[in-house]
Length: 362
Ligand code: SF4
Image (cartoon, rainbow, N blue to C red):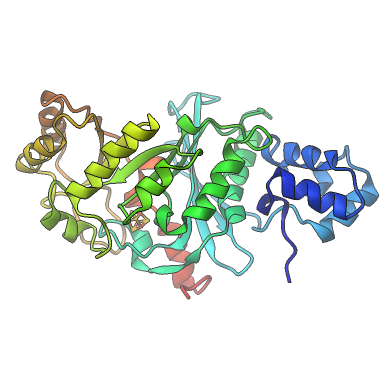
C-alpha cells in the first residue's frame, strides 16, 4: 500500500503521524511550511530537518502523490502543466498570470482539475470527449497548486505567496467530488497551508442537485461560478448535454441563494458558440432571466478545439451581446480565452496523452 503523503494530511493528522513515529509534532509545521509556502516537492529541499529524519520520512510519509509535470508555455504567458498521477492518469492545471506581460504578475491564478476526465461532456470542451476516468484525491488536487507555485517561484524569484487565486475550473465537475474539493480548499486556505483567502478561491459547477446549498452551508464556502452557457433549457441541453445538470431557472435560483447565504461572489460563465447561443436574441433572453438577481456574467468567446466542429462567435456579436446585458444593468465583461477561461481548451493536453495510450479512461 502507498503510504499517505504530506499533501493527503491536514495539520493535525500530520502532527499525529509524526508523533506516532517518535518525532516532535512541530516537525509537521516545518514540513507544511516547506510544501505550501516554498512549494518544496522533496525532503531533500528541507535542510532544516536532519539527514536521518529526511530519509526516514521519505519512506514513511512521502511529500507528493504526483510526479514531475510536463510544462507547456503559451505566448500569452499562461502555462499548462500536465501532472502525472501515480496510476498514470494525466491531470491538467494552468497558471494564468495577470496582467499579461507584467513581471512579476500581480495575480497568479491557478486553474485546477478535480477529476481525471469529466462526465459532463460540454460540447465545446476537450475534457468531455474522453469521458470520466476517476475522481482525484485531495492530495492530487492541492498538488496542482503546489506544482504551479513551484513553477512561479522558479520564474519570478522565490516569492512567499506564489499563488494568489485558485479557480476550480479545470477538468471535471467539482460537485461530484465535493468532499475532496473541500479538503483541498482547506489546505489552500489554512494559515498552515497556502494562506489563500476564500474570496480568492472559486468553484465552478454546471449545477448538481443539492450541491450548491451543501457548499453554502460549509464554513469554507468560496466564490461560485455557474457554468450556464445558455439562456434557456433547450439550448443548454444542446451545449451541456448532461441529463443531471440543473435546469437554468433552478441553477440561477441556487446561485442567488448561495450569494445571499455566504456573501461570496457568484458569476455565470457563458461560453459563446457561433450560431448556437451568441445571438442578440439570446442576450435579450438572458438579460430577462438575470434581471434583478445581482449576478454577473463572464462572456467567453469560444476558441476552436481540435476534433470539435463548433465556430467562434463573430466579434461584433460578442460586443453586441455584452452591450445588451450591460444596458440591462448586468455586468458582462468579455474574457479573453486564457487559462481560467480555458473551458474551450481544457483537457486538450490530457486528451492527447489519453490518445497516445497513457491514462486511458477507466
Ligand atoms: S467544460 Fe468543465 S464541466 Fe464541461 S465537459 Fe469540460 S471539464 Fe466538464
